[in-house]
Amino acid sequence: MNTASVVWLIAARELRTRLKAKSFVIGTLALLAAITGYLALSAWLASSSGPVIGLSGSAAQLRPAIEAVAESLDEDLEVRIVDDANDGRREVRDGDLDALIVGSASAPTAVVDEDLDDTARGILTAVLQQRALQTELQRAGADPDAVGRAVAAAEIRIDALSESDPLEGERLVLAGVAMTLLYIALITYGSGVAQGVVEEKTSRVVELLLATVRPWHLLLGKILGIGLVGLVQLVILGGVGLIGASVAGQLTLPAAGVGTFVSLLGWYLLGFFLFASLFAAAGALVSRFEDMQSVISPLIMLLAIVFVVGLNLLIRDPRSEIVEVLSMIPPFTTILMPARGALGVAPVWQTVVAIVLTLIALAVTVRLAGAVYERGVLHTGSRLSLRAALRR
Image (cartoon, rainbow, N blue to C red):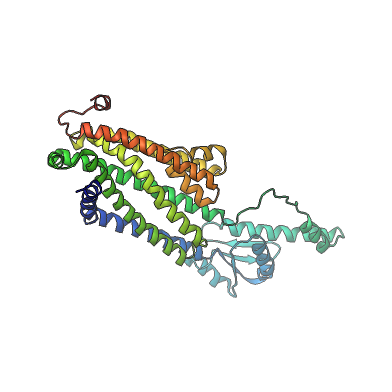
């Protein structure tokens, strides 16, 4: 068999075994349930109305002013007229009304169950202040309408140097989701590669395998197979998430969503091969599961630092110079560049530079990791130090 056939035979075995594993099925279903629950909760929160205010007696005169202020502030507020104040109090107690406004229009009282909603409080306060101002202007002999028009016309003029993106918030959510999925996938399946290496060393299966295949064939096949398992899971989760978000009305940028999804898959493959080779080399240094955590912890910590630092910098300013530079330097590239692509702030030349540098880093990493794996995979007993593995 040629090299490609041997590598694919090993990868196919990993792919079949892990796709049928209960851990993969249960984990994927759990993540799908979490995504579905999040989308359902987001849709419910988006569809839920704001506070409901009841007006009774003379306070009903305040309805036009309350609705006008709520509309000017772009707040969702429902106003109802309650004929009987006692019925209104009962509705407040039952939770059907957030507040019942009783008393005179000039000095109303809000009947609440425990406390007045902040949105309702702000709107009612603005209405009462407007009425008080109009009353004082009339006493002073001024025209309240003319004063109101003059006040409304007093606003600052905006001279924007660049056009704002009204969907920037949605793009930021896409970027955050892409970064989170990449982070989880790289840690989960990178650790899976290390676990698979240690498992084969513990069961002595690797000795039989190396009698017929070369070490780097085995390494490449294992990384390729486990990486494809992660790719399958990402396709399932990302596809369901995109469709669900579109149906729920949470995604109004289908083209950007699909572009981010495709970019996510491409950067996952680059990032996985980069980190999985390191995880495999780390697993080859030990012979027991008890020692595995100590050798992969630095890699997990590195990924955590890349994710946390990258996410915080991206949220603060995705166009800053430090974000641009880090997004082109591995290992930050695999986390930051797809997120910047989702935000639409990554020029083509920066993406090309990031891909080239990642491929160079991948070539160096695979060569070093392959050497460590080849020299450590047959080592048994105590933990093999990295210096010893490279010196052999």
